[in-house]
Image 1 (cartoon, rainbow, N blue to C red):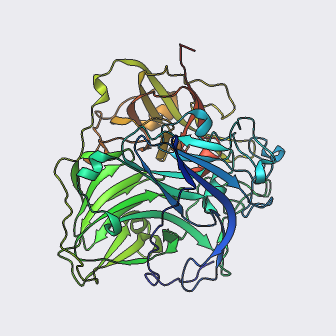
Image 2: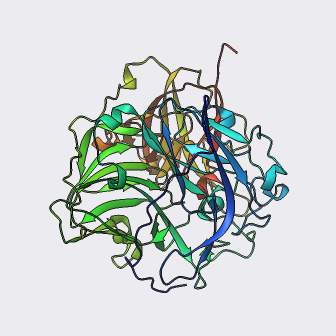
Image 3: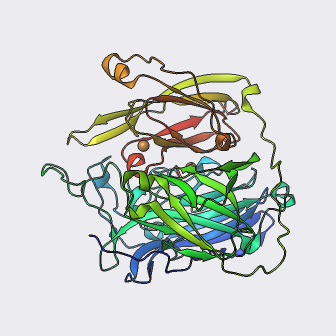
Length: 511
Ligand code: C2O
Ligand code: CU
Ligand code: CU
């Protein structure tokens, strides 16, 4: 379907905060209910049926304070039939109820039973539960530095469909150190959730039930190797605009797209200062011409509109442009510096933002070489694996509780993958290119260049990173503070669902 939705006709929705149900001595308690709803995502588009937390897309923001635990009861009131085409040919999913959910808070350090294990799923009213289900209320201790986290569905084999249907929201963790910096705050701190979707003319979500030109022998529905929508949404509106004052703003951005990566750029380029990454503030602000933005990553930026009074500034995606200059997906949103300055801008952009101790000082217990591998399944469909293992194969990665390890992701496929590890924040050591053709011919890794240090904006804490094709990308992490079973996976949701996800176990010898 091709029709033209006019850009920059709807204002950017300001995301609201969820009110707690109660506060007790053991923390703040919330309840969130997943349910179907309809919403107009663009002025000229009929209302779209979606699934959302409390019937909203994006879900409301949960705001938490460091060391103050948050408890969320995540209720499922979804119908029994899925909104989107479910492929039941993967992982024996035909045995499972079509609609099942479990929530993962991406970036949180919590125990396994609150982490949203893919097989801890449950159906409407907890009537059916997966093998790893153990509790209805999840606890987030928040013993970690301030950062933007996000909650999203993580149910086995259908994460791509549940998240695409609208099951995603933000969680902002705050601490004293950050407050003392006096960064732009209140209405000048704006969360931006970027997603791509496609629509039918009646406004309904479009998600293909089979890859383009699928052979008749493929299952129907059949999982796609990747999904890129033709329309970009920010905070649940198609190509919105935001009216701003001529002053500094802080934008907390999340790429919540299934597959799509972006290369963000301002047009005209009035300056983009990156101050944070997945795990919170960087050491120093980094001036960026453009920012690569992969699925599940968060970036924290300051834009100073003070010299741009009266002008319009576009947030663009250069990746869309590279593919095709007329591609609509090279557009994201528009800032209009049309508001008057309400008060003098007292906020700061300090030179020093935070301290980040390097993990390289630690004793490194283990270096794991983990291969990203392409193969195919019995239908000839691409099947991407980690270390040639399927999701259900026995656990192979078992770091000891408190151990520091290096994980060296060896990408033998032809494209990059955003790799995410639950429980921990890591630091990127380097990327080293190797000869992929030779590797494919004889299995040998021959480096074609020296290791490259991460870019300046990649030197903070990360939980998801781009692992480029034909490179070994090394990260270092301390596996703490909780033991038990977690997962690591590619965050392209079409890959994660089939079968680029593996369990891992943090082993506690004392137990
Ligand atoms: Cu954002 Cu395991 O996921
Ligand atoms: Cu996660
Ligand atoms: Cu992938």
